[in-house]
Length: 241
Ligand SMILES: NC(=O)c1ccc[n+]([C@@H]2O[C@H](COP(=O)([O-])OP(=O)(O)OC[C@H]3O[C@@H](n4cnc5c(N)ncnc54)[C@H](OP(=O)(O)O)[C@@H]3O)[C@@H](O)[C@H]2O)c1
Image (cartoon, rainbow, N blue to C red; front, side):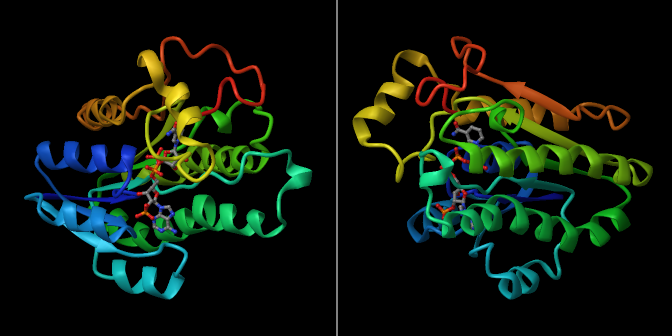
């Protein structure tokens, strides 16, 4: 049976991808921190929860030492406070970069020897439209996601000779808990009301479609946005990703 490792599997997009991969015949290791969400995943057949704070590098190293996944979904991420960059606490810089970028690169580096030895495989990165366009009040988040975009596309060139595929998921607004600590409940509801957001299951469906392409085809990036999400304007609240 093929094995997949999904990070951020306790949340919206990652959980949907983990379940979809399981339904596609993979055994899934589902990484996250939230104990209740991990307990919930433990009740799902074909899913092994992995409780881990990805910023704990020694724990990360130990946890994946024996893993050789066929599919790696680098999805864990966080949203820094929504504010002009000059108003952010300096500590937010390291927090966001460590979660959204450094931990993801470290996990990928740790798993690559085993994945290359497999002779085939697929690595997904959950990027964002914020990695490809400017958004006011999101400069730090944009910095992490554009770094993911550059990394994913360059990594693809390194891995192509080994038969490994790399896909960047360029997501627009998806209805998840990403803003739970950043916006009041009514503002979050307004963001998602009236079918204005992509659903996590929509992203998961695309991941399966890409994964199930013939081995000689690599969809190196796909963009998935709500139909009514317009061209990003960079305005403070209108087109958050
Ligand atoms: N929602 C959107 O509109 C949107 C758009 C574009 C891109 N994205 C990206 O999609 C990805 C998934 O986010 P989401 O929207 O599904 O939000 P979410 O529900 O908040 O999920 C975030 C996931 O990341 C995990 N995570 C965060 N910090 C972690 C850490 N230190 N160690 C381990 N896991 C950690 C969380 O785990 P715990 O809760 O267990 O800590 C959670 O499972 C993120 O990379 C986000 O930037 C989202």
